[in-house]
Image (cartoon, rainbow, N blue to C red; front, side, top):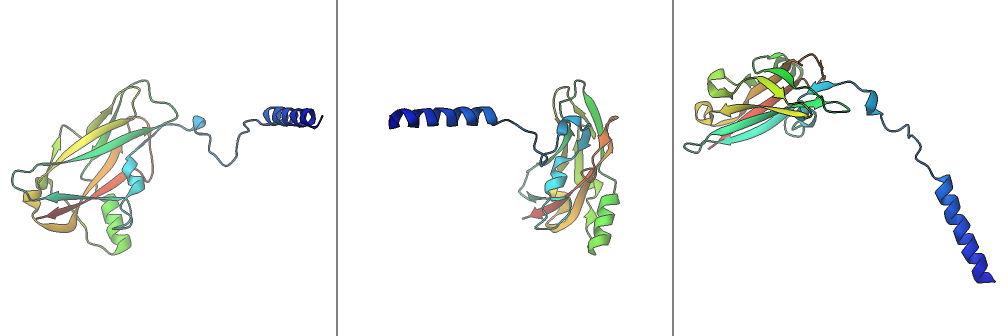
Length: 182
C-alpha cells in the first residue's frame, strides 16, 4: 500500500513539474531580434586595459632579420542575422581623433605610426561577404624602420564609412600600440 502511494506521489509530482514549468521571457536579458545592424571593430571592446587603458591593443614585433609582420584588423557586422548582401566598409589609418583625445585625457604622448613604417596590404575598403559577419584589413609592419621602440607609436584604425549601416560607438576606433623588441 505504501509502495503504491509513493509511486502515485512521484508520478503526480513529476507531472506537475512538467506541466507547470515553462520558458518565460526573462526581463534580465536583452531581445536582440529587434536591434538593427551595427558595424564595429570588435577588439575595441576588449582593449589592453590593464597595460594602457582605453581602446588599445598592444602588438609586439621582433627585429629579426628578414621578418615580416602582418597586423590583421577585423571588421564585424553585429546584427541579429547575417546580411544577405555583401557590405563594403571603409577604414582609415590617418584619423587621429581618438589618439589625440586619449593623449589629452590621460596626459600621454603617444605618436601616430609614420606612414613609411607600414604598408596597407590590399586596401582599406573591407568587403564583408554576404551571409558572413567578418571582413579583414591587413597591414605589413616594418619593424626595422621603426627600430627598437618600447611602445610610443600607435596605429589608429577608424571606421570612416559603414557602407550605409550604422557605425557602433565607441567601437568605431581602435588603436594598436606598436612595440618593437630586439
